Amino acid sequence: MTTLFSACDLPPDAVELGRLGEAWGIKGWVKVHAHSAAPDALMGASEWFLQRPTPPHDRQFVAFDGTVRVQLAQVKPHADTLVALLEGMADRNAAEALKGARIFVSRSQFPASADPDEFYWVDLMGLNVVNREGVALGQVQDLMATGPHSVLVLAYEQDGKPAERMIPFVSAYVDKVDKAAGLITVDWQLDY
Image (cartoon, rainbow, N blue to C red; front, side):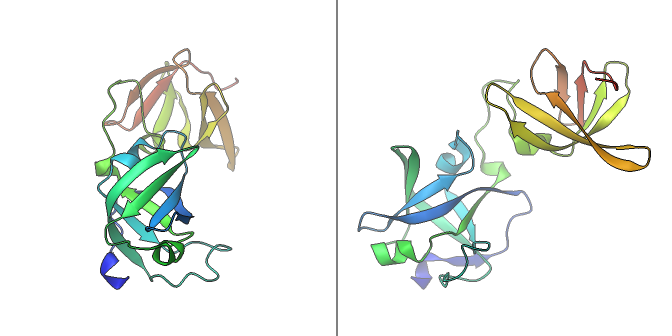
């Protein structure tokens, strides 16, 4: 199994996109639990970077230490999940040894969006948000899926204390996302 892994450093633009689950079948396939309902980046990557699972999933994990690079032989949807075969993975026991491993993909390997108004959440993190009048509303610290749309969660200071502001990430409120300038312009006021 050691030939399967290539020890490496995690790329600086790596994004955690899921984790490996239990073995699927007897030929080395493994289930993949994606963090997103649209796992295009996982399916489109030619290589994944794996790290040990975090507690409580790390108790019996012995497959490797640090970060390793693995090449993908195949990834495909199956029922409500994905299944993957890693290059060199030959049997169920090898697949079971990876259960819980965290999957990272280099941001540079994400597929490009065909729609200029679609964004990966990771690209919005840390952007500053201002309203149409140029008033600073905060910085994107998180995004929240609420069903029909996502919500920007902004961090800002009020009276010297950390605070949060939430703005629906929909065209009715978001005028422009300028990733190059690190800025999102919205139709929103301080007192909303």
